Image (cartoon, rainbow, N blue to C red; front, side, top):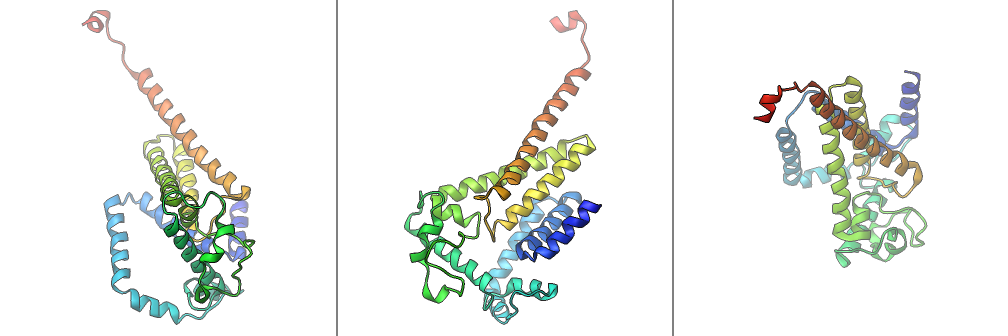
Length: 255
């Protein structure tokens, strides 16, 4: 409980809006798993939200443009700034980087510009009207701010599909381990590890840190945990089945 309290305080004081959003959405995923909501209902719900956004996109954009709340030391105001796409430099710079990534992709759609090259290549793809007070042409201030658009611009469509493949494989593996696990400890560990990775998959829509060791080590380490649980759990289940299999008399076995 002490460690949990320290982590909660750290997350709040970090004032990282992307982290707050990812935790909130991971909590929704937790309830979906716990209450065993079927996948088709989840997909239908997401489809309905996407459809509603498409139908009311102009109204939504107008509402977002009216939000002038910038980043603030006040907790409530800082949350309100998440949807500010009209004046918040951090949000606008993300949009600028994403637009640049799409333009880089459109020029080299299949193989991209090469791994790790975004920050050195994206400057000419910026538009004057999209630049912010923190924009730069020097290639020294960060990257695409997306684990999905970054590979799209650097390795083309194949790069983004590769990362999406990792995301889908990790989620399917985590769910498989969670559903099949008989041991409560394995079940709990697989669920927590999966939710932790989901927070990063969501966070990766707004930031990308896998090119740094502080994020890549726990990311791949958590995936290794799921793989180990999957292999261990399957072997344990197979062993139990073999051990519990009744031995047949010789004459029946021969038949």
